[in-house]
Amino acid sequence: MKTFDARLIANYPVNERYWQMTLDVSARDTPARPGQFFHIRCGDAWKNPLRRPLSVYNYDDELRQLEFLYLIKGSGTEQMTRMKKGDSLNLIGPLGHGFTLPDQGPLLLAARGVGVATLHALARQARAEKRGVHVIISARTPGDLLTVEALNQIGAVVHTVTDQEGTSSTASVRILSEQLIRKEKMAAIYTCGSRRLSKLVQELAVIYHLKGELATEAHMACGIGDCYACACTVCNDNQLKTVRVCTDGPVFPIRQVVLS
Ligand SMILES: Cc1cc2nc3c(=O)[nH]c(=O)nc-3n(C[C@H](O)[C@H](O)[C@H](O)COP(=O)(O)OP(=O)(O)OC[C@H]3O[C@@H](n4cnc5c(N)ncnc54)[C@H](O)[C@@H]3O)c2cc1C
Ligand code: FES
Image (tube, rainbow, N blue to C red; front, side):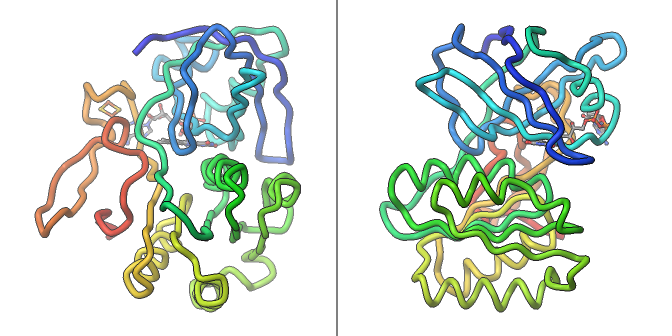
């Protein structure tokens, strides 16, 4: 796995807490799959020696452009917001295992907060394959709902729920999800961004015999399997196993993920 430099084409706020970044990755010819991530050096390597992982939000194979959607969380992502068009960013990637799709049938995606950045790339791929895609986006406030317009534009059906409007409880999202699973005859369900949502999706995948995958998040250091900072537990064939999110994930079959 090589590090490489990419030139910044755009970096701008999409609302108060989230930014979007576009990079020219024409120097690289490795395509990035939905669910994979890049490990990014954020500005000053002395101030922030650890890279930060960001999922592929969009990868345009023709233009060779890579996009990230990111939440300003701490010093690393704050430093990212200071980068300007023409600046160079150092990345490692694409890393990890991305999503897998069933042979046919519509998909239900359920994302909370910036988890929609990860699922957005999957929605694009599925729509490019002319599959039906429904996306449930959950957020604290209507102002925090991300990518709704972009998803509508590619023909995904978007359902928004928010804490502020009192529509994002597990019970409400369960009713909505079950209606969609039955009505649309969903073949698979995917989630990212919330433990509560992950538990619900895990239950629904079992009850309705759906293929299900979860894009997990973990604190990472090396990002390439050397340090075990990102270790988590999965259960496969009744056997508990320690895995690394960066190399064994970040996408896992949802039935295998141990959610406390
Ligand atoms: C696979 C993956 C994909 C992601 N995709 C996205 C995305 O598309 N968009 C998005 O907004 N966010 C995404 N995230 C989350 C994003 O990486 C974090 O929000 C970001 O790293 C925060 O960095 P910060 O410096 O702004 O915040 P801070 O919280 O100030 O710093 C985080 C730094 O501290 C380290 N750290 C903190 N606590 C620990 C600990 N207990 N053990 C080890 N290290 C620790 C982290 O490794 C990291 O280097 C993703 C995370 C993962 C794992
Ligand atoms: S971050 Fe080092 S092993 Fe995953």
